[in-house]
Image 1 (tube, rainbow, N blue to C red):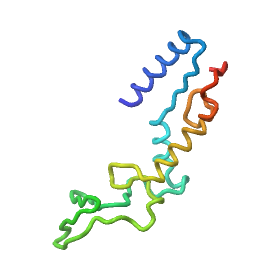
Image 2 (cartoon, rainbow, N blue to C red):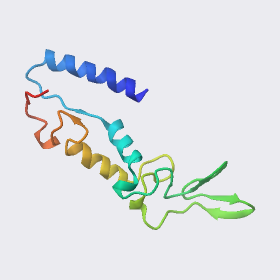
Image 3 (spheres, helix red, strand yellow):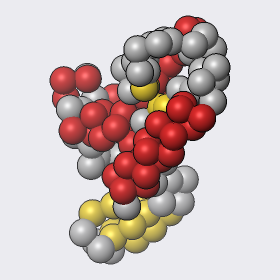
Image 4 (cartoon, rainbow, N blue to C red):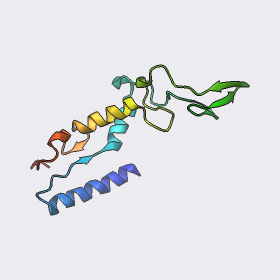
Length: 129
């Protein structure tokens, strides 16, 4: 669904750029940034993307971050990991601060933007769409 949404959004942006010729419109592809990070986690110095920092999720057992639960007859606490910046996922749902920072840095530097320019230049009209 995200790919189809982005396809339609890009088409609408092309129309808007044609209709609003003096406007500087920048498209940031957050899906592509997250996909890149997850697909290449190790080369970006993160743990495997399915690993989480806080909580415990194994098979059908879920102990949510900050909660207690029973695992194999013993009470366990779903605490945080020692090095949160090594993880993409904080708790299996939310991205870690380090992952969010990676995504923001790459969007702001233009790596996942159209036109592919740093955000500091995005307010200026560029003729190379």
